[in-house]
Image 1: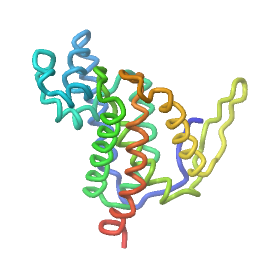
Image 2 (image 1 turned 45 degrees about the vertical axis):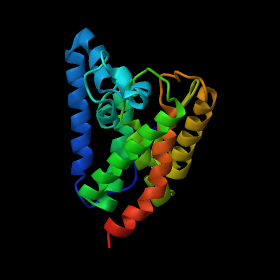
Image 3 (image 1 turned 180 degrees about the vertical axis):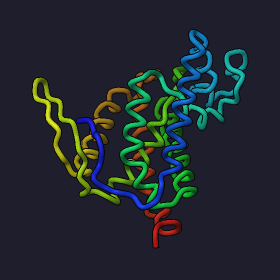
Length: 225
């Protein structure tokens, strides 16, 4: 189930959404330009749970303060599919939440959701020495906000089941609800697994939940009147 676009026009230009997409793409292009050096770049600026919990252990391994990687890790991606998928979801659902909250409040909302997602991953896999990277935790917060604000909005979705491929309009509550259920199902086997897997499912869950909680508060103070 791959969303293509939603049937939900906006009134304001989504300058923060577009700006964040451009920044993510520029950082990814820079990563590609580093060649083999991209691995060191990711280990320095990606969020390694063990180093955040044990900053003294980071000495000799990374030179960037581990606690600040909770922010920098949001702008790194592990490959073309990773960044394309994240930016697609962000563009489809982010512009409407920015339209609802306004530019600066939306940026604050996005970053807080990203931080919450990072903390969720830290709690789930505190001893992992694998870097957690990607904007998906922050974007998950945007998805959570969209779910409660526009549950019935139609989303043009690509359904791909074996040989069955079809474009259909599906209510956002089913598209985003299905996405969240998948995160839960994939996260369960990694509980207590130590290193965790290659995808930060707990970050997705944490970002999504905090987005649902925070959006009504932001809407109350900053939303359209």
